[in-house]
Length: 269
Ligand SMILES: Nc1ncnc2c1ncn2[C@@H]1O[C@H](COP(=O)(O)OP(=O)(O)O)[C@@H](O)[C@H]1O
Ligand SMILES: [Mg+2]
Image (cartoon, rainbow, N blue to C red; front, side, top):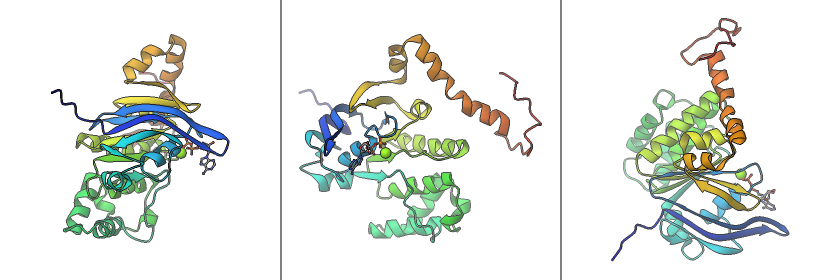
């Protein structure tokens, strides 16, 4: 008997329309357990729609999907117990401190040692120093990290992150990337959506591009690069350099020159 462990996520022929607007027109892909899968697509491509279907918040018109081996349509309760969802907008309580947010969720989930769980997560996401401060004083990156930490309470095997870094400044994005990489390092399966090619490039084991309702490419970064004609590869590889320039100008080692004139922006490698 050939035993093959079921993928963490399996999507087959998924279709979804809002009235006459056909958003998903037959989406297929698989996500291996313990991997990071990036669903790349422009604004309005249908990424959130897909994540909502996979997290049982929305029903597909046709097709099927399994998460952690459970059918999203027939076994929504089992799916919900297997996942966490961090939406596009951070869902943390501003009035509470970071630690209070975490303790609250742990208690709502009836976990023993809520305080201990909170402290471990604060440590893991580098929020220990800010643990006692109100979330309203946090930066965007800290907020998202707290949001991701909250979604991990109860150790769900599958985590959905819908545009985890949209709207963040470059430094905060890098911090969130570190948090996401750290997740997969612990065996959690991560499906993240993004509009940024460089984000997929940084994080994902596998990248799929959702365009006009279908997955038009699905592969590792190396496979994707082979598919692109040389001219486009050049375009794609230039994008992250904006960030490189940002870090070169701002400095990533605590350079606080407020005028930014202390550095020569023309410097290359
Ligand atoms: N509840 C809804 N009713 C009607 N149209 C919707 C609804 N939700 C999303 N849409 C439309 O479906 C398309 C895909 O949206 P969405 O899944 O949010 O895309 P993305 O997350 O990739 O930006 C967009 O054109 C959006 O305007
Ligand atoms: Mg969206």
